[in-house]
Length: 116
Image (tube, rainbow, N blue to C red; front, side, top):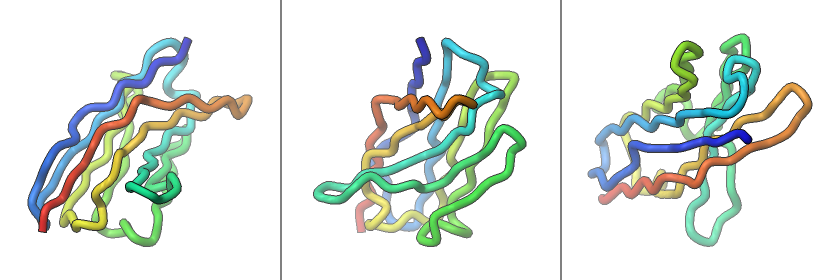
């Protein structure tokens, strides 16, 4: 059973930084495509950043240049470095793992709140 546990969210002022972490257990981490999604109140969940097994990355246009996704296969952990935070970044951030067979797994989410 794949488990994803996010941490690192919190309340921060605009312009600040946070580092989110997602620890995975229950499967082979380095075979997974990993991603961060977010969902703001009243809005659909959206992809923020993704990193493949080969560590290729892609980002939503709204976060390019401010967010950096990375992975540590030795620790089975996914990261999201968030800089220059804006109030519109306020959302619950979810970790996602997609297997080679396209099975998707989700964490419970971590709240990021940015005050202006």
